[in-house]
Image 1 (cartoon, rainbow, N blue to C red):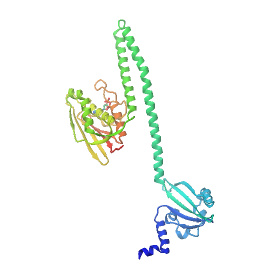
Image 2 (cartoon, helix red, strand yellow):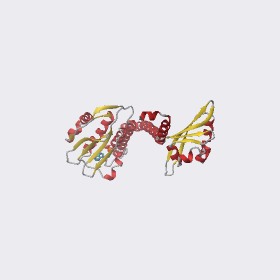
Image 3 (cartoon, rainbow, N blue to C red):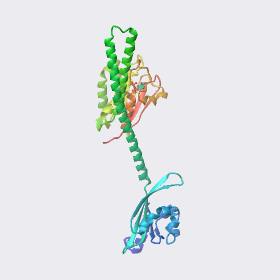
Image 4 (tube, protein in one colour):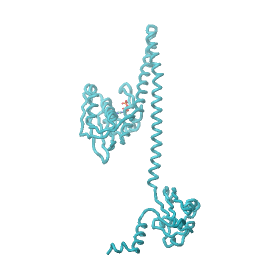
Length: 366
Ligand code: ADP
């Protein structure tokens, strides 16, 4: 019974109407005199009209208003029997912009154009994604340029530094007898400082190279930490450090880089220990929604919260070089590596109360 009805001509018309009124695209038909002969709900609503006001009454010029002049070339093209496609950027009164794509399909019978059918779709989300993609590509290109610059600059800086070092050695050797203690002391300081500068430049070079040619692979993060602990064996032994390791997952990561993060954090946890207290470190990981959160906690000297942002910048150090040697690169490198993994790194700490470094790793798959 229902099937019979659906098949009848009359109900087929009403079905077509029902369908066209329930699609989000705007549909209309304009005859060759540019009078509206059909408009679906989306179309009339967009222009704030009713079907009664539009169909068989309204001209396209009246409906489009100031847009008419803009659309005229496409209207004339369609009336000449050529399909038209164009995009429009429409500011909306509430602020922001919507984007649409319009198609005019000419209705040609026996070689004569009777009118044209209009189809307008909202492509705002696609356009916004497209814009975001262009923005990200520009950032990526800028980052590459910056990395290239850092690489070249640090590479070239090593050369004059080597020359300075060589001349200091020659001067020291050749004038050993004549030099008084003061001059010897100055030369020794210059030598120490050039060595340090060379190490800083090397650090900068390594930092700029992070992420080059790296590949995501599935690894057991517990094994990564075991390897780091084995590498730090001597330091752990001499400081009698105690390390507690919780349950750790297997994840897709950039293995060498992640190993470097654990190496930096564990090394710091031991290096920044309190005097006369055995370093104790807790390493844990918990799953949070679509990411894993790792933490490395220590019982060391801690950090004043006002320095939390600073310590993740390259070459930023809070303690004297004599008490705690280092170059201020470890945390900046760790941040860069964690961001490569789609994650974040942050710290919880207070002076004298130990520090906990947290970082997240997204569920990555190659
Ligand atoms: P470096 O250890 O070579 O100085 P980092 O980039 O690893 O460089 O760390 C930057 C600074 O952050 C350190 O100089 C130190 O002041 C502080 N810091 C890092 N880790 C800790 C920690 N576990 N406890 C206390 N301070 C820390």
